[in-house]
Image 1 (cartoon, rainbow, N blue to C red):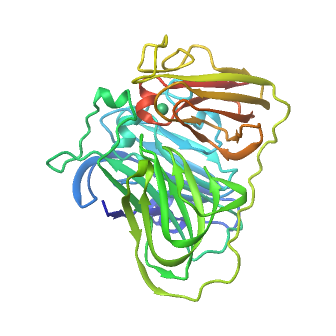
Image 2 (cartoon, rainbow, N blue to C red; image 1 turned 60 degrees about the horizontal axis):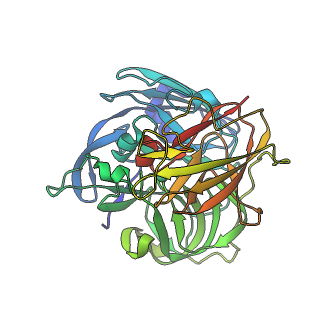
Image 3 (cartoon, helix red, strand yellow; image 1 turned 45 degrees about the horizontal axis):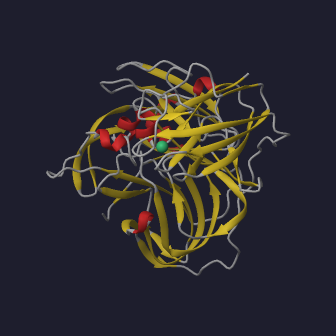
Length: 435
Ligand SMILES: [Cu+2]
């Protein structure tokens, strides 16, 4: 499906214009921004069809929140839905009570009520926000948006563009199909028959240097994203800069994951998904004219200040169980983690602040899972135990295992769950406690 949506951007200017008296002028350094997010039903045009879905502030994706590292945000969630609402700030290291998780950090916001979130942005990078209430349903209907934290001294590019990969099920009459088949919960999830890319702007020139912030807000679909017409590097994963940027190659993006690419335009820019061996065109970025390409090397990104791991204080096993062909477990749901479906009474780990925890994530099922830890990033470890990239969501293939190393330094109760939201809702969730 070849369509591109346009994600409106909450920049400093239109934030000020849109929110009027709620905002202070934009000072040169650390600033406080006010944002209102109002989820509600909407009728919108995506992929050439008019669809009845949900959106924040009348759009899918919701408005792009764009702030600068070190800033503070005040975000008011005004619930315009006929159902509960919660918003989670995916990948952002926020205080626990701002994390937007039912039961663990706050109550659900009932229809017509509002809730205020306030937090600072210690890390630059590409993040996103989404509903965390009945999220398999609400995110699949459109309740998500990009959350960009710019570096204080950002790399020089001509365009900084967000790309959100999204799929939907469209029925035979061309309507948005909101049904969930039980068989989908027990397998790879609800994979839409239409996939598209929402690109925040176009009008690029041949020779331009782009920063592409690619985000996968799809509920269950894994993409293998191929970018053609650009040459450059992958510079960050899940918001966190890579110490050594990697030459651009097809990028696996599981639900919740992100990658940043800095690349020069060499021809028509196309986005294609080749996961599973089939090729699906997600969209293109329209090009007009050309410029002399830069001669300078593709820049990397400055590291965020992350806590250094110490000696391992605890090593825990987390076994993913269930699903079709996945064998028995003791949980009540289709899926389970360590024989429990849904949040267990006691946390998976309960540690003092600053503890270094190694987790072995074992996938004993017949499907891949992407495990997301709230409030922290962690290192993926390779087979020899060497640290790989920082991530907040790690993909573990069917029958595979991966160790991760995490400094749990953010106090509170944090969810750890599969970000295939059909799996999360049917049991694949646990939590950790940091005292
Ligand atoms: Cu899963």
